[in-house]
View 1 (tube, rainbow, N blue to C red):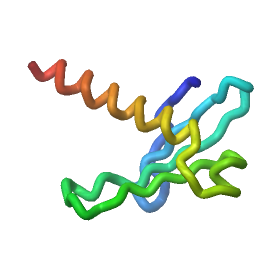
View 2: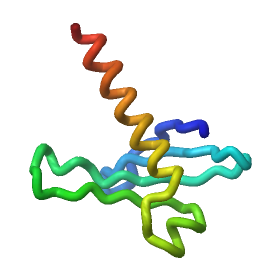
View 3: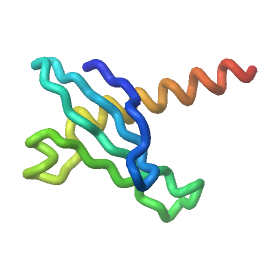
View 4: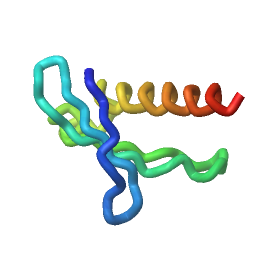
Length: 80
């Protein structure tokens, strides 16, 4: 899957474009990390049918989470 960060929506939530293996494009929205609050549960959403009907983490959300983890690791390594 191809993941690209788009922007933040009008509420400041990060949005990502995900092109699936089938060639369809979905938008994944991430509602932050809670600024380190251990009680905070990150909220994700996706425009794909699987998320729409089941409200579970879909493969597009998983791809964006892995993308974000990789970017964070790259930023840490750049600071060293």
